[in-house]
Amino acid sequence: MSLGLVVALSGTHIQEACQEQVRSPSIVRSETRYAWEYVTTELKERPDGWGERLSELHREAAYAEHSPIIEQLRAAMPPDSILSVDVNITGYAALQDFTVYGPGMYIFSGISVAMGIGLPGAIGAQVAHPNRKVVALCGDGGFLMNSPELATAVKYNLPIVTIVMNDNTFSSIERTQVGRFGISLGVNVVNPDFVKFAESFGAIGFYVEDEVDFKPTVDKALTLDKPSLIEVVKRKM
Ligand SMILES: Cc1ncc(C[n+]2csc(CCOP(=O)(O)OP(=O)(O)O)c2C)c(N)n1
Ligand SMILES: [Mg+2]
Image (tube, rainbow, N blue to C red):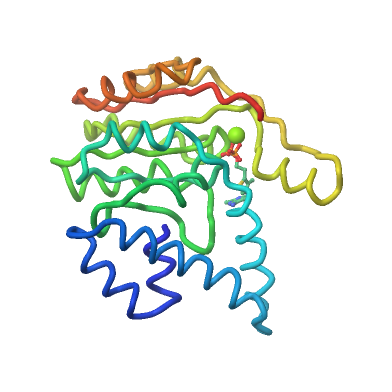
């Protein structure tokens, strides 16, 4: 997401940084961070309505936790693999902490911040790059929006690893509601058993309750030649 957003909004120095990225991935990270600050802070005074939206995005990004999951995910994924990120709290952490080594290796819905992109984005990436590893990083709410696409992944034997961070809640929304109003409403969701759900499509299901099991499970899932889903129990902070 970050690259798509910043290239669209903040000009040529970012594009130049992208061209440098294979040699210097850190340039892209720092330039991305700079551009994110620019679009969400300096442009927030815009009179055309985008200023307010950008301020919201800035608030959301400022909330982002630094999830240890992201570091482990980066360590498990080969450098040329592709991460497709849905709109969720761990996804916000990826926005700031997941190092990207090349163009087209990080997919997000950009400034529209539309939920549901995680799995379909990964399917498109896997079809385009059959020899690369592709991971979708989703919240429980965002995953369920397009979860029937597991059937597509199974039908075309796409070995995508879908990670579902399950907190049985629209936590991003809960946090915003509590921050603004002190209470929350309508944010708790009733979920299926994600492992059984994945298995019912013919995918492989994994269940991770303890963070220390996360990377070994991703390592294992990345060796499979069929779609898999890893449900990660996400405890409320
Ligand atoms: C299509 C769409 N609908 C609604 C929203 C507003 N929204 C942003 S985050 C979010 C909740 C995400 O829930 P989940 O996927 O469980 O991730 P979590 O916030 O719990 O980490 C919602 C409803 C959105 N961004 N896109
Ligand atoms: Mg959730």
